[in-house]
Length: 447
Image (cartoon, rainbow, N blue to C red; front, side, top):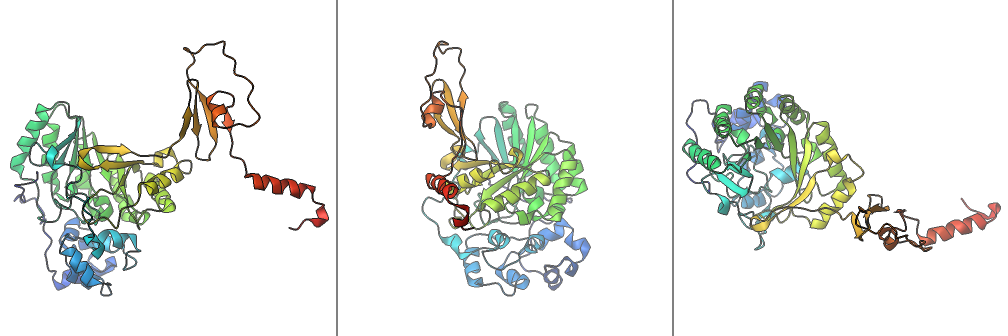
């Protein structure tokens, strides 16, 4: 799928490959406090890319008290690591209880790989008719434009592509992509992905966007990027001005935890939103990171405040190295149950499982429809209240008069139209205690 890719030799390109060993000044500037790096360097996204932490030795330079470095080294022998100095500065604790550490630093648990974990669990390669293009759904296509990310997330779905050989799509393949899009007018939506396409230099990215826009039947361009999270300084005025030229452009980013919503990240999102780019967030449900209802509530509230719409909450894909991140489906349903009624519908993502073998995204949600009959459907709300909703009655005999409801009401009475609402009642034992309390003399009661 992603063969014959190489680094564009344009003079406009920044170096894409981080040095395997840092110079002493680079090591010194990779400290947590921004004051230890020249401001011009710290805020330069190209410097952040060059100064990424790639080896255990660099990690120890940054975190001398790093626990279990041998385990990190063992995991690193299997999967690549890259952490921008910016994202490393968000780590507060040097263990897996810190969500930022957990998403960024390799752990020996990544070597626990049951047989059902596959390099390409979504079957992307079998849906790649030309190099770098994936056509899984009838009306949309995805372009793999680069294998480079600012940070290689430990839960990455495309580990088979990212990090192993940092490169970008050969410009010679762009005409083949355009030709395929022209030959398939049913494709109206193109997702520019990777790797992370915003690690490309702005002129390179513009060449790709211009090529897509040359196809008359393409209505929407979407860009999938995590740079607002891991490299917010990449969202420059130059970039946003370029993106404006190719509207409608949408961006989906990838915040997983409220701590990622830093001042810099929120400002990066604001620059994109101010350029007229709608923002969505594709979060992944990760054990030990965001598998807590209050953490997810804080994340969703923070995203909406930053003008980022929570779009998807993904069940972790079945790729190697993620078993310690995976949660039961029931955990995702629990989170969705909690969010409903506590936050605005605008702040509630759709929980989906991207099924193995290319089956596509399946939405999963708590069950709110309790029962049905030809005349009524019974729903429950987030408080547990049961409500009867009347179905259209044009084909129902109008002379049917429901009999009087029985004394005890349940779901059947709602479905039959004998009742409209059943509210949760206190348990029977609580009602008995309340009756006993009212019969007790005041002087005998204890408070």
